[in-house]
Image (cartoon, rainbow, N blue to C red; front, side, top):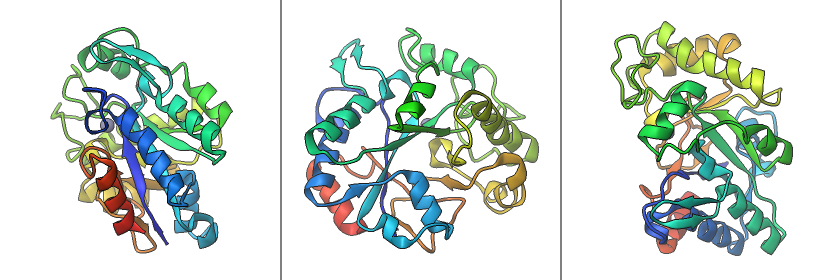
Length: 272
Ligand SMILES: [Zn+2]
């Protein structure tokens, strides 16, 4: 079992070239995946195989696609204030399906707290209400994008208040006590279960790709019945293998681990 899990950020729009626009990169990468005879499988299938609930053949010569943060750029075609019209990640996936006939699927790790997203819409985007959750049910109905948790509030440094007890923000490493983990992880799954399709797949992606010994060795393995997370993903640049840590699965990150089609090809060559 060797499955590269790829991470894209739809808010990454600094220009309209592959190297500075994750939408452009995603479209080119999907084409390269298809041209190499690889297929795209839902991340949940990768976890099923990892946990022994599906045979390895389900993920042979496959990649899984993930998105982080869950803004409107995942779902809606938007007119970017400086870079112009952008195809949503969902549109890029649909374009790929229409032109190749292949299947496409992605898991979007969303920031769950509505209040946090309303503030981040002003502090990280341009305050036009582009970080709401109105598209999540439609995404799940279509079966194109699964909605999973990227924590309650990302412990984001631009929020006036986060779940972290001492208000030490901008990292997930100090979510290292039960009360903080419960607020960031269990609370987020409760909200998703109440507002999205159930049963959920129970996937979690660490904000900033950061974790700590408490989450890895205590909170995640010892409180499964509370948080209902089946697997957590970080950002080590490796494929998911049989020996991977269920609570810190690796992902390759667009922009950090590759920034051109050639570099993406090298990621695939090394991972498969
Ligand atoms: Zn994030």
